[in-house]
Length: 141
Ligand SMILES: [Zn+2]
Image (cartoon, rainbow, N blue to C red; front, top):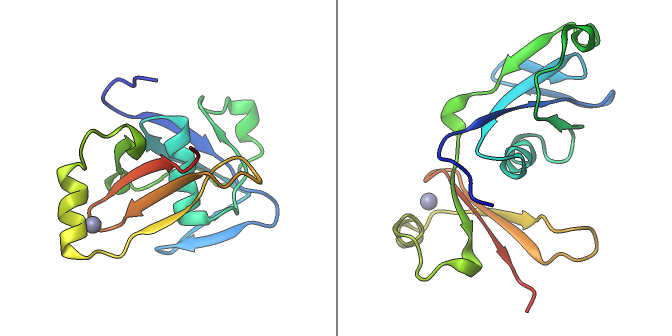
């Protein structure tokens, strides 16, 4: 899927028992988080990054006013400076991107996790919080 350069906005919600505090801001069932990402998949990656699995859904359209009655805390924009550069699938790289090469030589500690469908564990996400990139790879043959 070829995305245009530039980001879209996604609207993500939390469940009844989800409660987070980041920088003094509460993220819970009463708010809708507005997050910028190139595509829905990466919106999910960002949600996992900050909230692990403790969030509910991400929608591609802004909730209509009638829906917003369910969210007394309103829509909270999530820090746009946290946008990550999407390097796509490592499997399709002809050579390692300069950003990753540099990151590796600087010895940054990167974070990664399985993002594949349940019980497969073949798709992985890698993030460097310092270089602010994300890529995925598929370890199936
Ligand atoms: Zn790095």
